[in-house]
Each structure stands twice: as C-alpha cells, then as structure tokens.
Image 1 (tube, rainbow, N blue to C red):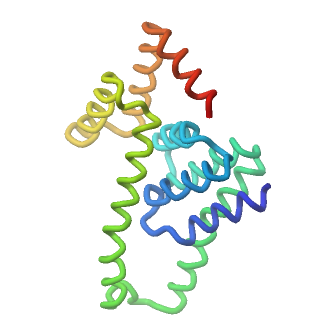
Image 2 (image 1 turned 60 degrees about the vertical axis):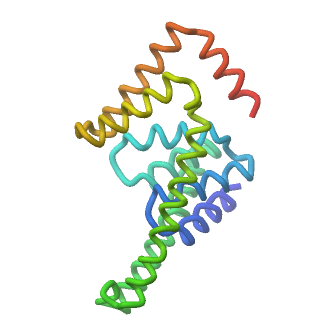
Image 3 (image 1 turned 45 degrees about the horizontal axis):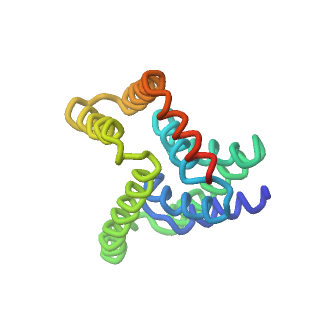
Length: 188
C-alpha cells in the first residue's frame, strides 16, 4: 500500500500544474476512486491544512497519507507529492536559465492557466457539496469567510478556526445537525 500511496501522489504531482490548489481536485478524485478516503475526509484534510503554516500540498499529503497508513503513509505521500517538483526544477535549473522568458514557455503557461482555474472551480463545487452549502448557515459561513479574508484581510488560519468554533457551537445548539452529519458520513 505504501508504494501505491507514493505512486499516486507522485503521479498527481507530476501531471498537475498550478500548485496545491490545482492538485486538490485531481488528488481528491484519485483517493476517492480508490476508496482510500471519502469526499468528506478530503474536505476535512483540506480544511485543516489550509490553516497551517507551510505548503498546502505537503501538509495535505502528510495528513491524507497519515489517515491512510499512519506515519509511513504520511512520508510516502509527502515524498510522492514533492519529488516531481524537485526533479523538474533541478532539470530546468540545470538546462535553462532564462526559460520563463521564452515565447513557447509563456504560451504554455498562458494556455495552462485557464485549465488550472477550471480544476479549481471543479474542486470548489465538489468540496461545496461535501460542506453541505445547501444549509443556509453553512452557505452564510462560506460567504462570510470569503468576505472576511478578501476584504478585511483576516488570516486564513483565523478564519478556519473561527468557522470551526461556530460549527461546534451550531452542533451544541442543534444536536440533530451532528446526528445527521454522523449518519451521512457513515454511509460512505
């Protein structure tokens, strides 16, 4: 299983351009397709690691790998996720010094950016389903978080912690929400 975890994260890291957020929909698709994690577990991982210091993909890989196979799974996932970048950067640095100014490279990235945006949008839609945004208070919390981060400069970690505390409060006030959440999560 460790080799499979490494290979999966390596493949996703190798064929995904655009950083951690661009990797999310591909990684989520791979992990849920293999039944290693559910959509909800992927969203939980993303929610948690988004508020931590360090690169999203490294934190996410460590958390998801640990969830699948403990400490060894975390190491396999992290090494798999970062190895393609290390290899590609070393090759590029050793061969091309002014690569980014080359017209073909600029054209490549100009073409890749819309696809990366589409992948991010796909990931948001999929995570939105798992986050139960159809519930008015979850949708309100999502909009409030967006506004707080975008217009008031609230740090991501503070926003995620605040939303988590509000979630705890809602489940204390309305315990039937937690029971429904537990029932929904156990059906996957």
